[in-house]
Image 1 (cartoon, rainbow, N blue to C red):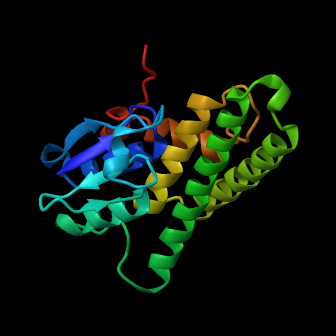
Image 2: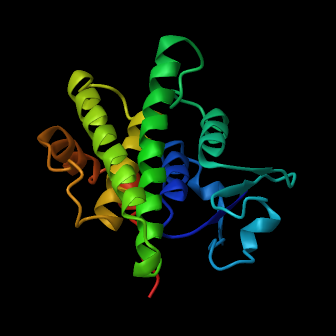
Length: 203
């Protein structure tokens, strides 16, 4: 399999963490798929021109990150990161959706800030930041209510979201100092799959 990736994409990081947790990393070749500038290399695999895109051995391409993660989860043995059915499945997928929403809002802020100052929209940034703060508070409450939950897809997505906020938006108060978030994140950084996928900005 081939994974079109970039070193800073949180969506790619989520996929790479799943691959490591499921013991599949050695079966995946990483292909530089930097989605900037247009036209992008990854566009031949994903019409959206975005990473990640996973190319299977038969040439089929899968995207985006929730689809790829669920596919990888089915390939290896052991406990599934996404329960197959019932309330547990919807709980995990809901948490993943909140964390992915944090990523989407975070990317919105990052891209808006890269625009010329005279073109930036304060309203767009404020709306995204408010959504992030609400969602971080939601995840904090979830971590508190389920402290012994396994490192499933919801927890993986949560860790990636927190990591992205620290990486890209450290200057904004987004609620990451909440002990329920900070203490959990401190533990998660010691996990090999997270340590091996720390985002690195290109020189």
